[in-house]
Length: 195
Image (cartoon, rainbow, N blue to C red; front, top):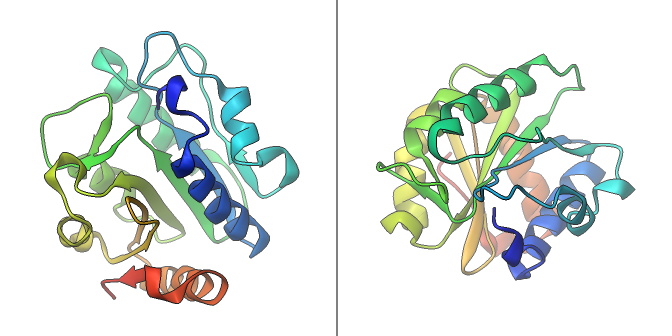
C-alpha cells in the first residue's frame, strides 16, 4: 500500500465488500501491506474502509514494520501469528491488501507471492484468506491466479472490473457461504468460483 493511492476507486470497492461482510456476520481483519519506508497513514485507511462504523471489522497494524525488503518475512510471520491468536467468532475473513496484487515469483514490496498465500492459508479451516489483485498484475489473469491458488481448497473472487478480491480456504463450505453472500447482495455476474 502506498499513501498516494489511498482513497482511489479500488479502495471504495474494498470498502463495499468489507462493510458487506461485516454486516452479514463475518469477522473481518484487514492487513494492509505497507510498501513505503515512510510508513502508512493507518487513520486515513481505516476511514476509507469505514472501520470506525463497524464492530466486526478491524484494521491490523504494527507501527515500524513494513512489507518490504528484509522486513517482509517478519511482516508475514506477524500477520500469521496475529490472525491465529485472536479469539473472534467463526467466519473469520483475513484480507491481505498488497499495493498491486499477487505474482508467482520474484518478491516485490507491491506484490504477495502465491507461495506466501499458500503458507498463510494451509490447514486453517476456520478462516477465509482474501487478497486484493489488479487484473493481470504480475502477469496473472484472474483465471491463472485462481488455478495457482486452487491447491489450497476453495477459491472464489469478486471482480470489480480492473481489480478483484480473491477468497481462499481449505473449508469449501465456508467459501460457499461467502460466495452466496456476494451473489445475493452484489452483482451475481461478478462473483466467481472454482468450487
